[in-house]
Length: 253
Ligand code: PEP
Image (cartoon, rainbow, N blue to C red; front, side, top):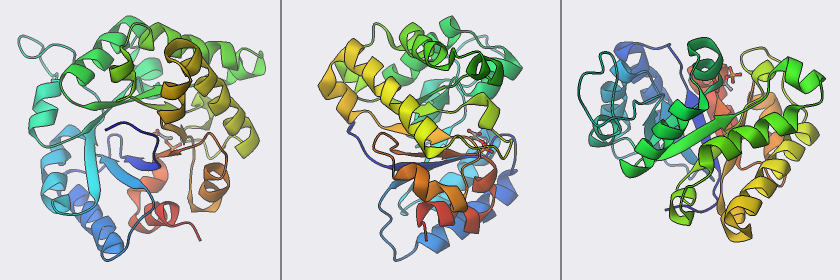
């Protein structure tokens, strides 16, 4: 599977233990029952919550993913989780390079590059997150930063691997701040990202790559963002922790 499609994903970050997470997933699944969402729906719970969520979403239209992985298959890597462990749980997706991993944990492009490749060889769909900081936006270097993040990690992928990769543009200044990029600003960065994929992998690959927007998406702003030609969905943090606001993004009024 590749192909451009709309994806609405919830990144729960370090929220929701296995009991709270099962209950949130059950509320979301109940809200989707009997409906045909026009998008793929993916939840990214914490590792320890994943098995409980997998049990709840079995047989529903909801897919699950992990928030991170390590790039080796197994071994002496205390505290880490491999692509195989995530895949064997029944997950299809994994986040790579979320801004909190880059800016809070300090992950560098060489690690992200290895993680992305490990995800792909382990049969997972990586959602590769990119985005500029406020300083970088204000100094006028946002597009250079974002295209650099694309180039340094995605260079060297085969066309088939690129075809299984999803990108999320998440300006760091918009994550968890309540400040959202305007649809025009977000749409224009998505166009730049798609142009970069086209230069690297060809127009066909660029046309098929889902590019999600993330950064304070909520029911009140999702529809306008998703109307933009190059925005194929949303990676939602805070608003994904409440079933009705997450469902309000899946089914905009
Ligand atoms: C995120 O965690 O990826 C995110 C976009 O968070 P929020 O929606 O809270 O800004």
